[in-house]
Length: 587
Image 1: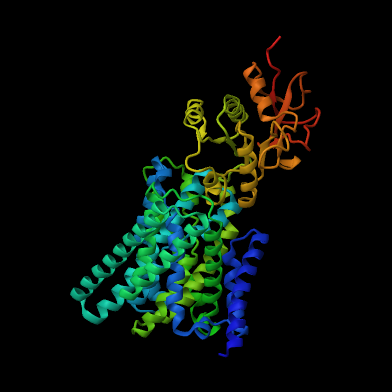
Image 2 (image 1 turned 90 degrees about the vertical axis):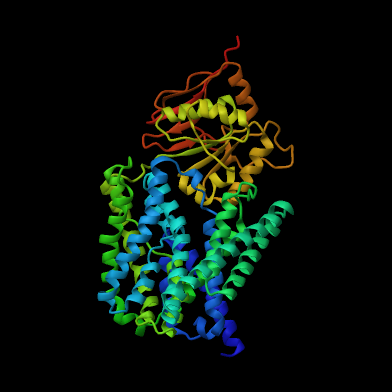
């Protein structure tokens, strides 16, 4: 290819990756549903986008490094401390039982259905165990199942992505090394590969600790340092032994997430944007390599494999994983109907299939097109059916609000109790220990970790937060947090009116985000509460009593609407409940 063709191909790949993700966001569907057909179509109508032609022999190593970055990012979300009781037990079982059963069932079914060797079937089975939050998250955001189910599925997807990546790399080494040297020699090489990956991951984690903890690099430089370490260590491990960099990347991510000293900021816009771009480019590039010639003979057999995975493997895994737990039967059934495949399946198939074919594994050339069909079919099937299935099983989350109340002053805690009394599921966050103790003593759910981790991204999805209310007694914190959160989340964010508008380093928010109007400031609410005013819930059809202030309206469906500077409460004739602040008791 000429330099002009390479430039066109690279530019087109990036443009298509971003455009497909934008379109998917507007359509409110998982990006993979758009990325795969776009990449496949682009690969069919133009030669400029084929990664083998664009990058030549550099393509497989670059895919491996890109997957390493994605797996490192997945590892950063592996915090099992947030899972307790039966939920934790279920997630752990879903991962290890799922890996064992799904890989075996998929491999056994692939041999007769696809007419491939046992070795190629074993590789395919290892590839198809993964799911992933990049696919599960958007599906759950659209379906909105119960919070518990969403939390379990999100954690399963995050964990099994990393485990599946490691499994794929290990099976790859098993197949090639056993064929070359026999079982004894393979065992030594297998142990050597595992040791190199673990050693590289631990060394990388130590290097990250030195950079992020000892040198205290800032957010921007710290993020680029993480990227450099992950790519450098993964490349070094892959140089020593193929594909051990994936193991090292996962180990580094888990170490950074697990060691408290790292204390990474929850807000990582650059890294998250980079991972999103990598995912898009990988899907476009990988699907462009799938030709209709390779796809046509495997479509029907691959759909048969999908049927086995959907109707046999996943229900069996979910059933065994939830035995002895307090999950209800409909909840267990829904877990058995949600296992789409995503980026790690596609990237590991692209990374390993070609080398296995070169190594003489019969049927290895079919691994990538079959994986392509499985990804498209499972995402489409679950995307179209998960909503109706959730409604039929009665596990869809009601359209009730779940507010995140930020602050632990006495009046804010009483507000949380009153909102809970109206039927809402309230989540609270506070920075000070005494405020957190007050929230816990009141029996309200307390969010752990950083505010940004709870109010944005996967944290907000896992906690099912629908709106954020900044109720602290510090006006500057409320205004600053409101400004930051608006950049990082699509959730509505509200703040108390500052006591002195126009003063300080952060300007007051827009009228639509200022709670209770600009007259009823946070200081005024706290002072009035300290003087004896109490918060109560009363039918909205009644008029607001003299001396009371309407703060919220909770409609019969459980949707919470705050009173703001530009939205006053209706005067009578409404169903639902008002949350009112009464007058103080001073004579």
